[in-house]
Image 1: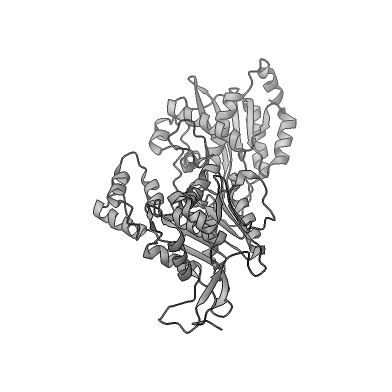
Image 2: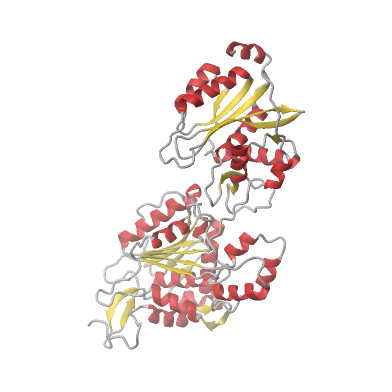
Length: 524
């Protein structure tokens, strides 16, 4: 029989009501194992939504979902409970009862495949967020829930004792998972899932796997960093584009300024945290006000705002302190060069570096930037080639490091003309190598072992550079943390800044050739 008529306005058919009872019957409360699991009203509404079904077909309305919530809201216990239910609970539509209400059944019935649940993350310690909560729910009260549900619980995976299903934590580092018959996937902390750590690839693989099984996936995340191309950012973009079948649970605090009163801040936090009664909002206010807590971090993790928390590579004040405008580098000086090229959208920059008063000094040899108001414009490659040749003729170039994007032909020509040992490709997308160069540049800035010409384009591009961690989970303040330089949230050009980094790197690594004067003379 079909679903009965709704009893009140806005009512919809969902397996959530049956599951709320099921969780209460079998699982303990996360904070008190002597009591049954009861969700807050806010969490219950989320679960009812997620397990909503079509009143005509009985199919789920959502194929994948995402909860973007503040740190400490309670995402992990909710996903742990859902993971257990997906292993052995009534999560599949089984028809309508005599009263026209939906009835659930477990995976592995009516000829279906047994449940295969994966708790996925980009690192092993990250999987502990959800799997650790799940393990505690099943082993509390001397393992009562595991015994009642027939689950063999292990530290690394769970099996149904009758062999009808399994649940396991998995990571991006474990290799390809293409083709696995996964029925449900939890994607944990997807703001950390990036193209560079395998997270985006893992998410796509899991979604393909559950799609062929008629299963589903659900993400949990804190606010993401715009521009990092994380899985969380991709999900938000898919929702905004109107992709069908995606459920997004995202409650953010209203806009609040760092200078607002504690009362205003606390009120904003109360909206973000909703019914999470276990969160001490006064304590969070204190942590936010701590001078050691960056405001950007507070906005992301507590207020749930998507904030670019990348720090500027150098502050304007420090850059101004190191300026030496008006310096003229004499002809014949031993120099290094940094080259960052583009075709049309970005700028192309050639930056030189030499010693002035025993301190590295960088200056803008030339930059090519699209003139204001021009839509169709391309870098005048013949001018660039001519400028490079003039520079090699005017100075003793010990080393020129070139970011090769779209300029391979010219770089090969320069290497052939001026020497392969003097014109060298430096791929700025190589994170390990680029991080070393950026670290050398930051150290020189910090120690004052650096000066520059203060030219406008050069300055604008350097000040637009932002630091991005190579390993996103590293601590910003750990001296071992490595950074690369990227565009900031406003996408301002940084090409001359990157060329500046390359010029300093070239200066520090160029060989000391005893015959460089004679070699230079050949070019003049």
